[in-house]
Amino acid sequence: MTSPINLHAVKAIYLFELARTWRTLFQSIAAPVISTSLYFIVFGAAIGGRFTAVDGVTYGAFLVPGLVMMSVLTESVSNASFGIYMPRYSGTIYEVLSAPISAFETVVGYVGAAATKSIVLGVLILLTARLFVDYSIQHPVWMVAFLVLTSVTFSLFGFILGVWADGWEKLQIVPILVITPLAFLGGSFYSISMLPPLWQKITLFNPVVYLVSGFRWSFYGQADVPVGISLAMTALFLAVCLTAVWWIFRTGYRLKA
Image 1 (cartoon, helix red, strand yellow):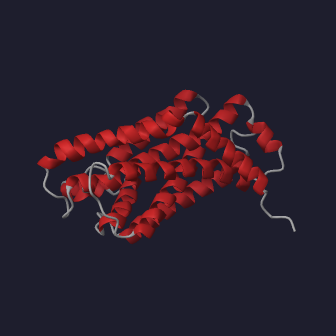
Image 2 (cartoon, one colour):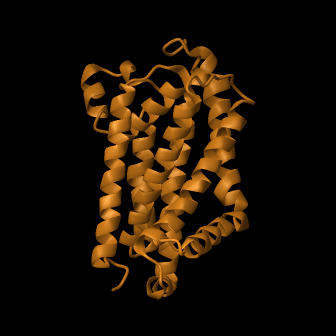
């Protein structure tokens, strides 16, 4: 009995994308881990000693979920957008589109590989953080759930960005001008309760706030936003991305032109 999903096709795309990671190991894995470690050294060890505890958690430990989430979502977008843009740029995407592979299988291959890279990166950053600060994980299952959900959601967003971009400049402009500022302003380095009331309300329009808040809750049981709302907002963003991907393959937007 044949499988309804072409697993060989999914595996081929998935392994090809992962192989690119091993060829650029320093850029894909080592560089983000090193740069995040510098945040732990500067903010956690050097500056953190000057701060009082945040919601009963030392500032160094408070940083861990935010920095992990910031690295995971930025790398998810970067990996997925580059992964689909390169076949479009080189023209090899037409070989994939003409092969007996469904849109679902194509997306699973590309997005699955990008999400896997981000999950591995997140785990490595967590292990590295242990060298600098002590932290606890009260809800490990939910921690994994938020890590996987964030990786998949922003890999889908990166896939959409890679299809939309028609040049290298467009491929970089959204991560630099949109994703990075949202990540920095999403509560990675602070609790939004520290902000003035007006800015607390404005910050709630930042989707990254819900990701960081929910992920931090899985560590310390405390969050700026109720965890149920964090899950709902993340699921909503995931649904929007899935709808956009469905429309791309339904219309052939920038894939078949």
